[in-house]
Image (cartoon, rainbow, N blue to C red; front, top):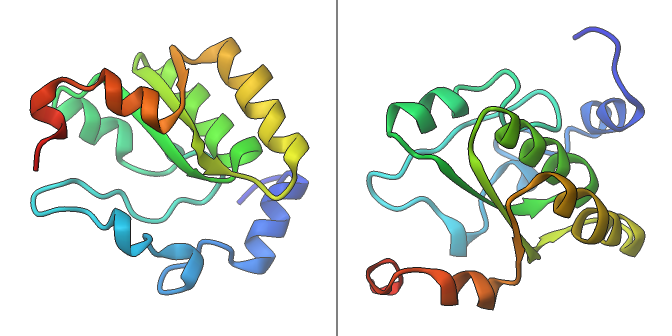
Amino acid sequence: MGASAPSQETTRKGQVSAADTWGGECHPDFQPREGELRVHERWTASGFANTDLDFLLKQYHASRFVQIGMRANTCIDTTARFAQELGHHVTVVKDAIAAFRPEAMQATSEVNAPAHVHAVLTADEFISALPPAATSS
């Protein structure tokens, strides 16, 4: 990897999201369902850089991108911006993201995301906006 930012160096040294570690696995409540796509391993904060995520989304004609997860001020911000720049409609679910500091959460949900994504919603708002067929099991 070329020149790394401080957050990238910390992540690389700590192997925060390394395969087969706690940080590299999905929470049991968010395991992919049969037939759902899953993009593995990334090298930086963006879920798009060095992955086939954009290719898969476009291959399946998916234009809407909903983001939850960890780390609001790095991975969430970077991936959301990248998705928007690639032409996807981006929604960030603000109470389904996390950060290590309250200031980082505030920066993402109140400053960064509203400036570059299409919607910043709570989980309840997001679920309420889904068509009825999408919420049934």
